[in-house]
Image 1: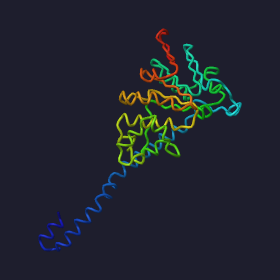
Image 2: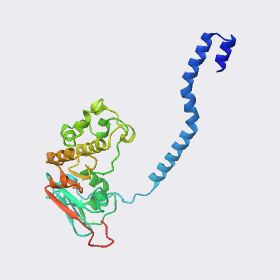
Image 3: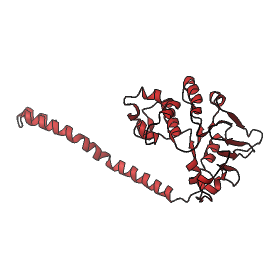
Image 4: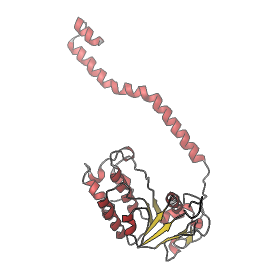
Amino acid sequence: LGAAWMAHQGTITVGNFVTVVGLSRVIAGPMETLGFFGAELAAKRGSARRLSELLAEPHLIEPTPSTAPISAVRSEDALLISTDNGTVVSARRGEVVGVRADDSAHRLARQLAFQTPLDPDCYFVFGTDATELGPDGVRDQVFVSAHEGTVFTGTVFDNLAAPNVDSSAMTSSALDDVLTHLPDGHLSEVGEQGKKLSGGQRQRLLLARALHQPQPILVLHEPTTSVDSVTEHRIAHSLRNFPDKAIVVITSSPTLLHSCDRVVTIDHAARDGDSL
């Protein structure tokens, strides 16, 4: 405004006025950033402090070295866990086992991932007690895909966490259909926490990530709640495309349960106050 007034009064030329306008547009961005710098710095310092406090907390589950190398372990059951009410969930390689659980489903998934303390002789992986393997040993063999998984900022390829794109995992998760609607296919940006994806697209990406994992045991917790019935039917039958894996599906979906080799029901209704 000052430059316009000066140009009107003849103090500066029109060319000088244009230069001032151009300069103001160039420095507007940096000035805006500088204005928010204090707030951003305070937020980052607060986040760093909370993260530091979290990392300083003692581990709830101490790692325990395995008494035998994984390669030496042999068992007919790849996975076997006994729940609090005595129900046994087991799975072998090449099997798809459904688990129909009540409100204990979330905790069962956490137990299978060894994210909660376990008693000896209740959870076995390839014949070895999980408490002997320790959390890291269990997770080397078991991958648990949580219902509310995290989608990271970056591309679809970045989120698959694999050195290459496995076509069978893409097809079985129906993620290949999603890629046809994205501008750059598997190199498309998904946005912060996957905000550029719909709920169904996000869930198929998480399922594809799980199917990419090298672990021989895969646990899926409600993997199809946000997809349509046609896609769910396709996913249910495609889970049989992994004969080298033991797959456990914790779900209430009739479509998924119908496609399983066996279905185990965990019901604590008969035990008041009990939960897995």
